[in-house]
Length: 138
Image 1: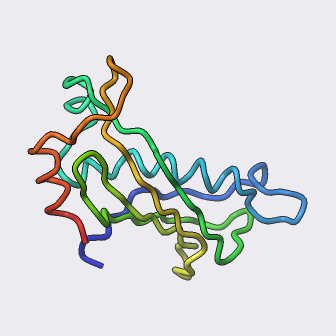
Image 2 (image 1 turned 90 degrees about the horizontal axis):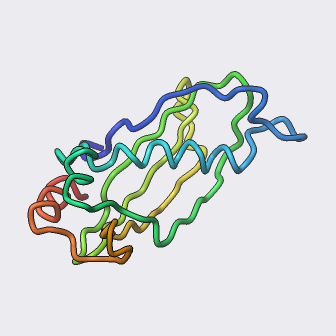
């Protein structure tokens, strides 16, 4: 798992749990969203640098597979990896674990599109960005 990076660590709070006593799906989405912001940094791309170019990324597609429940008080870890780099987009996968046991609890697969923040449309990934992402891709 040398190209898998630790993106997020936290704890499941009681307020994040539903009537069944496990973390509600909206909080899985929130944790994955927070973790996803860190993916470019592992390719040496800072958020400030990307923004200074008038660029960003937007999620085009995501899926979450729920594999094992997580309950209040459990520590969680999200690991992520870039899985594909294209002309305008890249894919990444994030896996959420109960960190004490390393039980794999959920997986999110995401397609992110390079986005011109002024024109409000998808654009090609700059060559240097594409190259940096490709270096860390599985």
